[in-house]
Length: 637
Image (cartoon, rainbow, N blue to C red; front, side, top):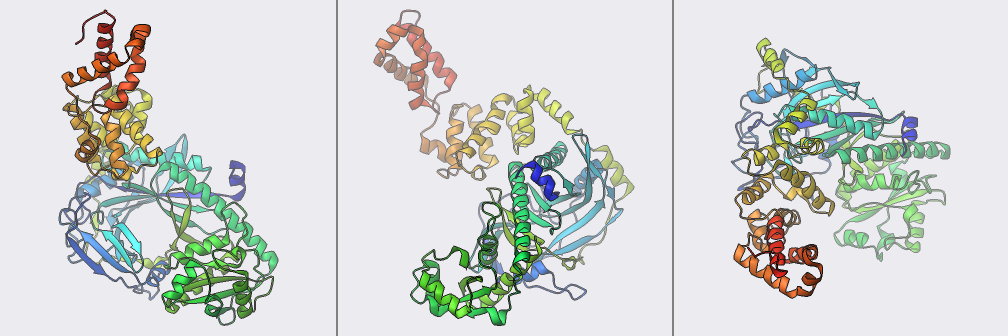
């Protein structure tokens, strides 16, 4: 969508930044903030919804309850304890987390409260074993300067991070507890109008401010953006789980396109004058029509004892498949909703016959539903006890389409699109924490926080550039990357060149990602180990790309395994000398004709076999000596 179109639709975006704090311990216990690899403890829970103190039910909690999931948790005593298992009351609040959050709030000129209350935020998707997340509102207001413009701050909260999702399939959802309880600061910014590129600059500015404190965690997953997106006349859509700035820009572009597309669909539906779907009249069992169906989805459902239902929608022909923009269809939105209930999907009349469903079966469905040529219909299969809930949600979503853009919570995909997650939560999801007394913010706390407000990111960047003698571009790349802390630890003893380290961290790893390899498999500890091996002379510089590529490609789990499988290591001078002597002899005619100019071609040949085993500079130097010896200009080393 062009910038002009975005201005026309009244796009507004509000960012919520969630940043893990680098305290080393969790918010309400002394467990280490580390990621475990082994989980000797395993237990299950079923989380149930409860009414608020006013007797109300939260819509997002009600939605989760309909899924009837069993939650399986994995835990390790090195990274979690009885607090995370909800078998023990929370301990005292982390003093360092409190101090860091006050420093950040002070840097943003937020009005900080003198007395802070811990609240329970109802969450029953399993990401919190207790069924709620502990959060505390530290203050309201403030501002952030971005390229000369002031962006308002709505609120700042200190809260617990959630458990890490491992798998979600069937009736089981699996989490690990190592991330649960890590201190997290949430910064909610005022909604602003602007292009996706301008919103990206705001997110970059707040990220730089956080990094300048040197009190936050780094790495993928340590900072996440929730994005509240709306267009004129539409509801606010919250998109969760945006981890990278490039992904943020794509998500905003997609949501602007999706929401405006839904607005166009609404306008067309209003002209058609469609009727409201009545469950008792428009929903019928159509299993009989599919007894001999060739569709694998239908066959699998019937073999498992499921039934097939049809939903008639009067005057809806063509509307499920109508695309105001490529890929933006109401049918796609309904499919996302159905899949979140565990069903394989939903067929709609605008895409049939297809997927093994024939014309004859469509005719029979229309007969059973008493659907005319101008009517649309949906077909879905599942267990009868689940179908009623799913169909109720589908009918509600169709009615919402007539009103435009529904307020809902969606989740970002890696490609920058969004998919349905759940309804927006209501006010009834928050209630006081009874196990923790109020947190008092004293004058001494505030004075100390103000004294520790960090330098601006521009000053921090200049310090980094001077300390490590980096050019401005490399300094900026490493400062904005997730590897700043790792870079400093690798370069601090002087054995690794800062320019080389930054080019590897910001160049080599990024290039491997662009080749489709997964950087999430490459832990910081393994990167540090590889640099240590290089500093000790156990591997060559060229080995790093091979090692990281092996780990990111899933071929090795550690530096040692990658070295072993790739047959890497530093080759001795004697063996290297013999190989180069044979190379020069085998290409004697080239050496005689081209003299010293032959080194380029011979280097290319040598590197094919010796890449990762010999440092390039060392190889070049020895090869040059061999060539000079061959043509009578010197002696071999």
